[in-house]
Image 1: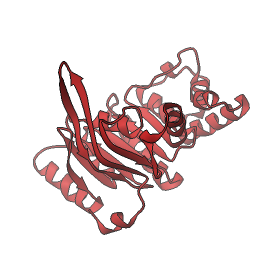
Image 2 (image 1 turned 90 degrees about the horizontal axis):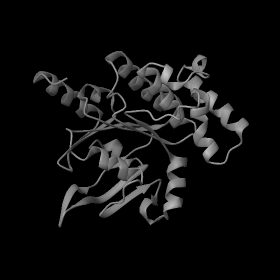
Image 3 (image 1 turned 180 degrees about the horizontal axis):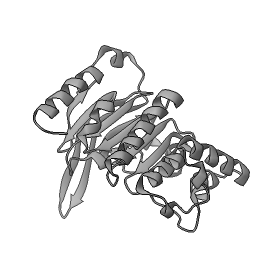
Image 4 (image 1 turned 135 degrees about the horizontal axis):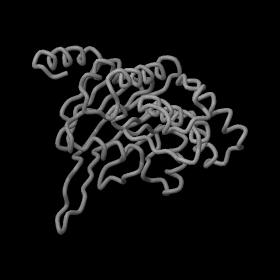
Length: 251
């Protein structure tokens, strides 16, 4: 790990994180002693093959899936020492989430869908709509504010999903395979928006993906396989990693 990263204060940290699921009379281990650090204002990619434990790890970082053993600290707080309602409120204030498949309230238009997280938090309609329009403008889709989300292309819907993730002004954006259903051009636009969030707005972005071509964008890359961290790479190491992958025909 690069020296500058060791010195920096993390925003998320896990400590010997383990997760098991019951399977009949047995317990199946999905995560095994995961120790990782996520640093502010960085684009961290967690990558690995299907079934490696990526999504389970992400759900644990979000506080949605309690670990069997180990701890998750977010902004210095032990996530699973909180009561369920405290953890949900903490998650809603600190995280914005972009999923592979956007979920919409189909009776609501784009502006109303993006407003929803703030309304559920108890904000006024005027504030929620104003903040939602600002978020929609940040992703360049203000002219589609009155459209139904399902009228938009897949790439546009993912941008609206990002606007909804941003509307609560979270410090961390978490993305679970956000480009999985998109074409190459739309995928690149989404990744470029993540980079812009970091550079212009100072956000932290954590993305889970199996698409290795995005590694060259990352400040840090974490390889996971069979529920274990296989490797962790800083920016200069990622360049060599990408070069090696291209050399063996993996893109």
